[in-house]
Length: 391
Image 1 (cartoon, rainbow, N blue to C red):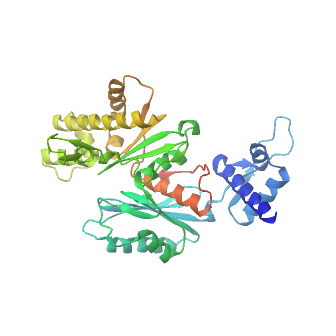
Image 2 (spheres, one colour):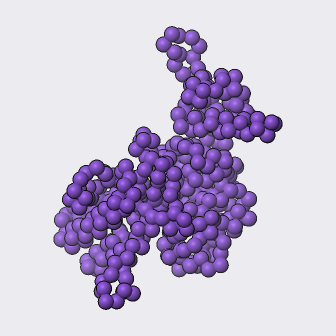
Image 3 (cartoon, rainbow, N blue to C red):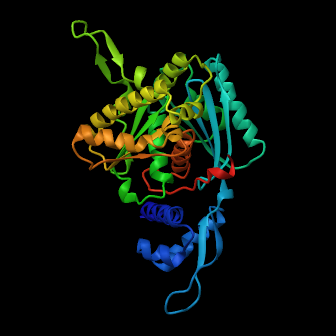
C-alpha cells in the first residue's frame, strides 16, 4: 500500500511539473483544474518542487471575472540545472548548453577535419569540463549521431569511424550524469515537436527531413518517435536505385547525388569555387546563375521524390524540411509543395520549412536528455528556444 501511495505521489508530481513546462507561467488553481487534483494536493506538490528549486514564482496573475485574490504564477526555474548537447557531424562537433526549460546560453562549432574518434572524444570531455567550470547543476549530456543508434549503441556511423569507442559509456563514466545517444534526424523531429509553438494537434503525426551530407527522416507517430525494430527507420537517404537492371549490385544511394552537400559540391566543381557556401550559393541563385538554378531545381526534384515515397508509406499530417540550403532559399518551399502536388495529385499534405537547421538536433537533444534526467520519458513537455540571445 505504501509503495502504491509513493507511486501515485510521484506520478502526480510529474504531472504537475509537466503542466508548468507546457503552460508556464501558470497558477496552482489552474493546474488543479487541468489535472482534476485537489487544491491541497497541488499545493503540497508545488511546495516540494519549490524546495527542490525546480520551480519559482513569477508574480501575480489576473484575478477571475468574479474578483477575488490574484493567483500566484509559477514557472520552471531555469537556474535549477542545464544540459550539454552535441552534434557529431561529418567534419564538425557542435555544442550547445541549455537551461532546464530549453533556453540556450552557449553555442560553438569545432571543426574536426583530420581528427580520429579518440581525438574527438577528448574534445567532448574538454567542452563539458569547460562549461562545468562556470556552471553548476549539469543534468545530462546528449549526442546527435549521424547514423543508426540502438539501445545506447552506435550500430552504424557512415561518416566517422567509431572504432572500438563506446561513446555512451565513456561520457557516463567520465561525468556520472545521464547520457542520451540518438539518431540526428530523430532529434530534429523532437525539436519540432517540443520547441515549436504550433498546436500539438499539428504535431502528432509528422515527418521531418534533415538534409545535409546525408538525408534522414525523423518520424513521429502518435506524438512519439518511431525508430523501427533495429533503429533504422527514417534512413531515407540510403534508399537505392538501380542504374543497370542486368547488374543488381550496381546500386546508388539517393543521398549520394540528392543531399545538399552533393548539390553544393556539384556547383563548386562546375564554377571552380571550392569555398562556396550556402549563403553564396543563394546569392547566385537569386542572380539566376544558370548552373546554380539547374542544380537547385534538380535538388528539389530529388527531394520531392523522397518526400512523395515517404508520404505514401506513412501518410503524415505534415512534413518539415530542416536544411541549410532551403533556409537560405526559402522560396524553395513553395516549389517543393508545387512539385509534390503534381506528383501526388493532391495537396492534402503540406511541406513547411523548419528554421534553425544548424541548431535543431541540439535542441532535440536538450529535450531528450531533459526528459531522461527528470524521469519524464513519454510525457509531453514544451521548451523555450530563444536563439537570438546567443547568436
